[in-house]
Amino acid sequence: MGAFLDKPKTEKHNEAGMGNGLHFGLSSMQGWRVEMEDAHTAVIGLPHGLTDWSFFAVYDGHAGAKVSACCAAQLMEHIIANEDFRGKLDVSQGTEILPSIMDVQKGIKTGFLKFDDCMRTMPEMVSGEDKSGSTAVCAIVSPTHIFFANCGDSRAVLCRDGKCPFSTTDHKPVNPIEKERIQNAGGSVMIQRVNGSLAVSRALGDFEYKNVEGKGPCEQLVSPEPEIFTECRNEKDEFLVLACDGIWDVMSNEELCDFVRSRMLITESLEDICNQVVDTCLYKGSRDNMSIVLIAFPGAPKLSDEAIRKERELDTRLENKIKGE
Image (tube, rainbow, N blue to C red; front, top):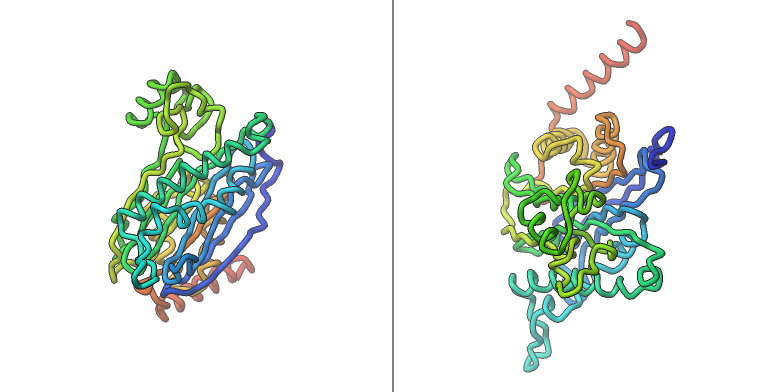
C-alpha cells in the first residue's frame, strides 16, 4: 500500500520544560511511515487564570496530518476557554472562581465536541478533500487533581509508588460498548475495524464516519466523545506517560513504567529517556509513527549513585567486547 519507507526516519523532535513542580520531556519520530501524522501539546501554566495548571496531549493522526495538527494548535483552547470549564465569575469581587471537578469534566467534553464541530466546517472537510482523523489523549494537571481525556487508542499511564494504578482505555471497534454504537448507527465491525476500514472507534475528524442521519455526534459510527477520568494527586505520584499506539503496540504499561523508572535512576534528562523509549520501540518492531510525553512529579525516582556506577560498568564491558578485549 506504500505506507512504509525502505528504511526508518530516526531523526527525533524533542522538547522539555519545567514549572508548577513538574518537569516534562517529549520525543517524536516518523519511523517507518511515509508521513509523520503525530502531533502533541505541552503547556505549563495555562491562560484564563490557571497559571498553576498544565496541559499535555498526544494526537495520533491517520489518513493525513491535518486533524492532528489542528488538535495541537486549537484543542486545548477549546477545552479551557469554554463556559462549562471556566466556572463562574464572582461579580462582587471581580475575580474568577476556579473550576470545580464537575466543571472541568463537563468542559472537557464540551471542548472536544465543539472543536470537532468547528473542524467539520473547514472547506477541505466540507468538500471531502481531506478525510483525516486523529486520536487524542490529554492530561490536565491541577495542583490537586489530574484530569484525563481519551478519544481513540493513544494512552495515558500513571506511575505511582512503582506501580501503574491507572491507565486510560483504548477505544477499539471490538469493545462491546463501541461495537453496539457502531451497529446501532448502521455500521459493522469487520477485521476489528469500523466497516472493515478504521481501526479506532472514537476520533476527532473522520467526518465520513459521522454522517448518519437521526444520530447525534456521540452516536455516530465514530464518536468524538472523550472518556474522562479524574485522579487525585498523591505525594507518591512519580510520573505520567502519554503516548501513541506506536509505543503501546510493543510495550505494555508495566514494561514502559519499569523502563522509565530504571532510566530516571541514571539521568535527569527526560528528553533522553523519551528518545530511549522510542529507539527501544523501533528495535522491538514498531513500524508506526512514535510519540511520547513524559511528565515527572516531585515524587519521581532520583539519581542513584549505585545505578550510575552499574551503568558505567556495563558500558565499559560492552565497549571492551566490541573491541575484542
